[in-house]
Amino acid sequence: MHGGNDACGARAVARCTELGRAPYSQMEGGLFRPYLGPSYRATCERLAQWMQDAGMATRMDAAGNLIGRYGGQSPDAPVVLIGSHIDSVRDGGFFDGMLGVVLGIEAVAHFARQGKRFPFALEVIGFGDEEGSRFPRGMLTSHAVAGVLESPDPDMTDCMGTATLATALREYGLDAKRMHMASRRDDPVVAYVEAHIEQGPVLEAEGHALGVVSAIAAQHRYRVTLCGMAGHAGTVAMKLRRDALAGAAEIILAVERVGRAGGDGLVATVGSLEVAPGAANVVPGHVAFTIDVRAGTNATRDDAAREILHIAHQVAKRRGLGMDVVLQQDLDATPCGPRLTDLMKHAVRAVTHTPARLLVSGAGHDAMVMAHLAPVSMLFIRCAGGISHNPAESVTDADAGLALRAMTTFIGLFERRFG
Ligand code: GLV
Ligand code: MN
Ligand code: MN
Image (cartoon, rainbow, N blue to C red):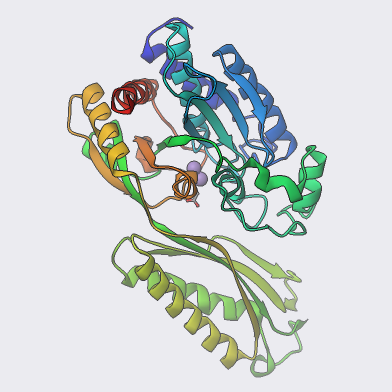
């Protein structure tokens, strides 16, 4: 495509939309693209083709991330990574993650058309498992790239009960023991830049197409299991019951109460609940659920998590339930790199002709992990109604075009600063 940024913004939106259905989704009537599934493989093949068309050499790293490289002025030039994630939540939207990947490809295509090379290489990276929608832990693959992956349990089973992490990797020609070899610790990575839909309503409400992220909220994700006693729903007297689901219900309401009472961007969610045996005429004997707690600071998140878990223990004790809690995701509040954030503010101002709106991201991003490797910057793009993790997610061609201009302007500014 030789059109301007608007045409390329439209193409980015069209590409995300194309990737929203089979074979790039493995859910009937919606989008679900779990890490290393067949839809993931098909998507990587399509993305690799677009990367090659844009002038990049492509490869898959040891963690299953897809990387396209547009070399710099010298073979050993430092690297600027541009990326986001390929995987999706179940019944997700087309743009969460994918828009950042395809905008990265459009940014490289923009420079390749001009024959422009930088004193740094540009690499577009599509991360495998930001969401944690297949295996219980998310962001394993950015942990691997940042060189901070602490041996993940190769026997953890996926949400479909079809494979362990080790088998899923093996089926993909990868090896759980070698995931850490995706590390870029020994490479001169000088920046990580991620464009992403806002996933919230602020930009739309205030009339901004774009925003700049100053920091990303701290996050804890727990898996809680409660063990009571299954029994006949018609014969076990109410006072003799050890109903795991009724216990979970009390805890879930406490999660909501604690989340509501806090400030500092505190939010707390139970988003998944499994009940066993799960029959109308059986007292539930076993329940597993997640608790997701986030806040602007680690301290606020930690206080809330402590309070929730304290209440949960009290409920379990009073009801005679066994309880097990596993912390599955532990991400610190992450400030974006101040110098890069300044450059991104300049870039947004240059393309929108208004001062950049700074935001704290309540959503988690691979940038939180990549901050262990290099300074990070994030560009936010307005999405309709602030809706995300929902098939109704939507972005306009014009906003995607503006985002592309902001990204290419940022890279140009970075070159000047870099020299
Ligand atoms: C990912 O979208 C997250 O914020 O959990
Ligand atoms: Mn995302
Ligand atoms: Mn998401």
